[in-house]
Length: 136
Length: 334
Image (cartoon, rainbow over all chains, first blue to last red; front, side):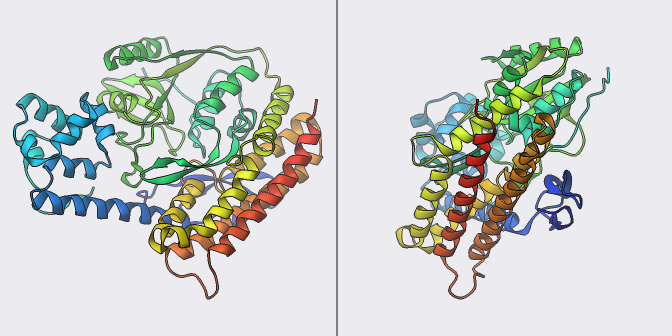
């Protein structure tokens, strides 16, 4: 890649630029700033699109009473039961159980707080079924 | 306490952290040099390892190995620690910072508040350096960012104890002793030899240039095997692994080409310059693959352009890398 050809397509990174390696006119390698590159952007947008679809699918199931709010918050944070279990120091099967509305309703306050703490939200927010998917 | 740390933004976090740490200990070294000595260049297509249901493709060696090899090959003393308790991990960090020692750490990226939201995935092999503390905040040199940043203690603790694959478990490391002068030449040779060995002669078909060819064969069959939608997801993921922040472009091929240029000076061997140019050319070819692939993802591919054209590009990458690495290997043979 030539220094003059370093792409400057704005990326999704809030204006943060990245470092690229490119050759200058004399053929020496230099570090060049790149604002982003369209092919990489397309791939990134695609990845986020998949996550957004997953969140919406889970939210629809939560509304239909098939899954608990925990499942929604996990989807929002790209977590599966195994990853979640690491954060709340429970077993995977326990987390999977809590993803169902019935067992979720019987969760002790201490466990609710533990879950909410991982997501950095209050217990009330954690238990509420959101109106629209919150993707930050 | 507001110590200075020679922060440089680099392409890749691991080689960047080593380069910055060594520079802070009076041994100025570039990121590309650290990457090369650490034998960073690699290729592996490992479909039995899934990340979010997508097969793992990697263009670099396993996390941590660049650091281990560079420090070993340059005779740098390192103290490493891991922890079970976040409280202890943070206390130990404070103790070292109090003594004025910059500390490297492995962290997850998901909980780092200064990361752009679009980059927040559960990736746990990130590296950064803390070089001071102000109140309850740490002064952090994150090599992926243009400037040093400030990170709250709670957020840093969370990132150090991120869960999941490659969980960092609070891993931290600092330089304890350095040689009087760096003897780069033997280390450079070792690094190159290692890259050639992994890329050319591992008896496992998913790794090295054979792995690139294997990927080409698989990729050609994705649309028939997986359906169009999934084939495009696989392709998009491949492009992300190749071009995401941290690769310096072209799946680390450009960083390695930069290293070969420096190697030419260190070893006084002009032929490395030509090989560097050829490595640049394969990097450009990888970029071409990303451009064509992204067109597919957008549904904008031209008439008659299909996955076999993409596979052909990959086979050319494999062929070129194979030829140039063989020549490279012959230059550093013992």
